[in-house]
Image 1 (cartoon, one colour):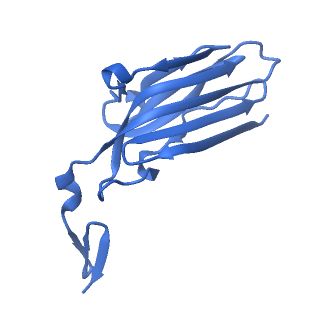
Image 2 (image 1 turned 45 degrees about the horizontal axis):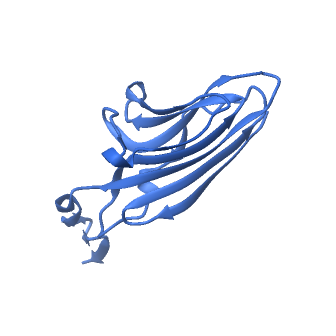
Length: 163
């Protein structure tokens, strides 16, 4: 059994993040809490780290399997379902009018996971093609400005000075 998947960043700007997820799964394969988006890997803005995302839009197709996107929590038992993709589904949904779907996981990490939910015909292969548009949210500006000192080195705004 083999899962062939790809994650392609289409945009990683100061405000928006757009990603394309695709996979081809052989019959019976499953993705279980597979990390698809890591906020730690996203670009910074004015020395501030991206800490969370809100989902603005989805364009998706699924074949012979259903999938769930999950907002990850530090405690896996508190993960929250972001979106359910039913079997043999094709749609484009926009949530821009109300600011997007917010991350409501308790103790959120900001990351997005994917889980294979069900198989249609267990003898047939399945897969998905999903494009996600997110709005980035950043750490409070005051949190990222402070300098830290460690072993004679001062780090301020991402630059390290050795004393």
